[in-house]
Amino acid sequence: MTQALMPALPLSLGNLDAYIHSAHRFPMLSEAEEMSLARRFRDDGDVDAARQLVLSHLRLVISIARGYLGYGLPHADLIQEGNIGLMKAVKRFDPDRGVRLVSFAIHWIKAEIHEFIVRNWRLVKVATTKAQRKLFFNLKSMKSGYEGVETFSPAQAADVAHRLGVKPEEVVEMEMRLSGREMALDRQTDDADDAFAPIDYLADSRYEPTQVIEGKVKARLQDEGLKSALESLDVRSRRIIETRWLNEGEAATLHELAAEFGVSAERIRQIEAKALQKMRGVLSA
Image (cartoon, rainbow, N blue to C red; front, side, top):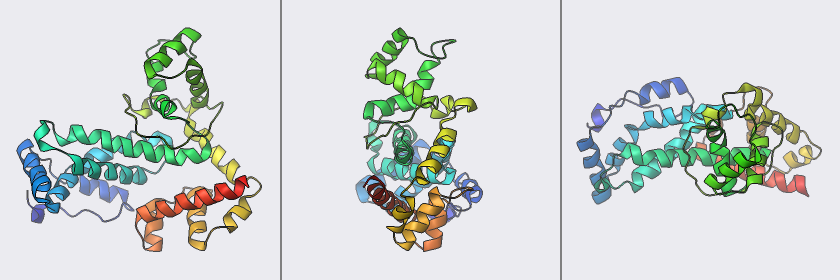
């Protein structure tokens, strides 16, 4: 496969349908092609070889990102984060370990998407510690192993706690949070593996966490002090916060704002994170 034969890929995720269509036009690599490209990148620093490895696995990112749509975050943003994870995987991939890139990349793609979800949900009080982050991504799927159970008994909570390495009371607490009855703040945590797709436990619309979170976001941002917090921001930062968090309709994506300001989506994310941090400081003062 040569660069000249590759179909064109949209530079932006702004037109998501066109991006997905283009991504699926890239042919899958055979094992021999994949290993050859990986060795060229590892041994010779061949950037085009790395590019071909990334492009041939974009459909994997799209598939994985689709499984996290239950969190209410834009599909384009989830794909963007997954693409970052894919690039990290390509950079670290060792073709001599005897595994295909797809198996190696899944962890990095999910880890980046998980981090993006937790980073966005942090503002509205979800998850807490490293162990509770593991609970966050696995509890409902584990609960399905107890047939007919809606709420854990003390013995069942203790069993799940033992399997996940947390306290029984943390299992009960997270069970309440995921049911929409309570939320808690989280902090920065490192990556944790998950065994099940979160979409498995987001299917029940009665206790859809994203519906609860949407209400929490609007309520928090309408609290006393919001005006002064917004006034503490520069014009660009305020525009990003207002379109990402204060829109009555659909929130703007990172890529839409990147196009508006003529910068990268990563730069918009950095500005957004800094602005939210500044606002939290004003609101807590």
